[in-house]
Amino acid sequence: MRLLTRPLIVLALLALVIPASTANAQRDAGSKIRGEYNFYGNSGGSAMRSAREYSSNYREYAKSAQPVNPEVAREAADSIGQYITKSQKHMASMRKHAEASKDKETLTSLDVIDKNLAAAAKSHAEMHETCLKDNVDAAASMDCCKVIDASLAKAIAEHD
View 1 (tube, helix red, strand yellow):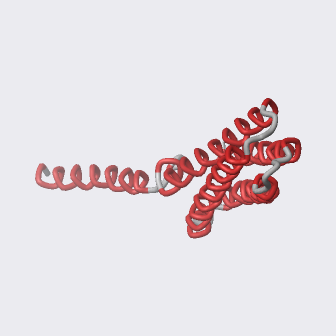
View 2 (cartoon, rainbow, N blue to C red):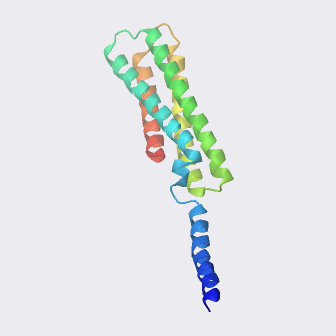
View 3 (cartoon, one colour):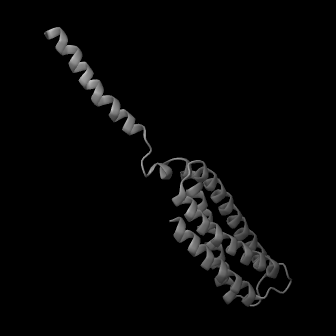
């Protein structure tokens, strides 16, 4: 009887251990935050915030500077554009991962973010054109920045 008890105990312990390890192997709800989305998500958010910060800083500058220094305007426009482009690239990488894993929730959020990044990029193009002139129209460039700020705020809110 004692010989039969040991194998039964071993089998009972294995029955408890195997399902527990299988459950631990499954992805939990936070895995996308810690895993493949982590770099692109964090970097994309950082780039959006940087673009918005540059835009806000330029707007404050243009409000007080008379006339606007074209070199400052171009530098601000270039930086804003670079950060918007980086954001779009990071979101595109996230989209690839979300499509591969059929993550509909993330894809829905990315649709909102992409729409707002596209609006920011469109307004940035107008700002950039304004800032290429020798006489930078402060009011026009600040209006572009308002749209950029609003679009980025919506994208950041969805991202967060």
